[in-house]
Image (cartoon, rainbow, N blue to C red):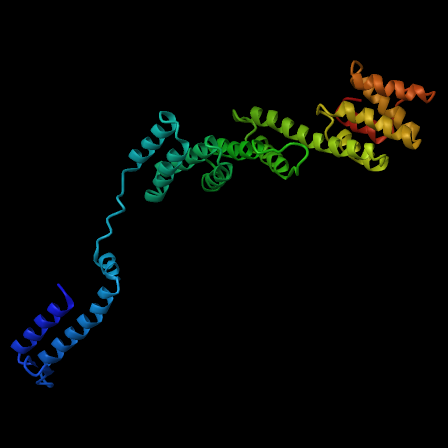
Length: 314
């Protein structure tokens, strides 16, 4: 109905109630209660008319419309739809949304607990590691005594581990992976995930050792032997079980020979030969010591010797 038509109909209604003179167009019977009510109605309509004329009619539609966008669905239905999307359709992102919907609609149900873990798994499969870590951490916090808590903790560790960068970059993510993997081993030593966590832990430690070696080699090229020794020392004392330790011992032999600390050079070569007699790095270290008229000889009081004896490798 147009604004003019609406006003015309209201004037007729007012006139019929004896409160408005259609001819004069002025309100009458000011003391009449009915007149006051109808005048109030006219005022409200007049306020509404400019709104509709300014293109804001949709605001009224939204205000009056019934919101029927939310439809609650059974928890088991949502959960099974999530499984279907993940296993049959291979759509991990869509699956995670279904699992999250279970938690949203049925937060205190057993289905919500299961869905929280499955959403973490779905996030992990889709490569959304940060979301996986968030969901799995929430699971461990809410359900620490659950039989699946070990798996949730493992997902946290695996998410960090899969983001480990190469040795030329910052290793903060590697350190987080090591902490999370150690947590799996410490809290759940008999779980099926402990062995896998141990294997990943060795890989992460190897990465940190590799970072130290990269920096140490850089200092060797710059002939900054003291700085290089500090890096190789870290590998020898903290990462003896990694694949980098053989080279670290050979580099220590080289660096110590270069600055004239021949006792440590002899010890590094001797420990290398004792633990890795067939290593190509031992051949280099042995020849380097021999070139100085010396023989590999282990000083039992050296930090190099103590580091290996601590592990039963000396």
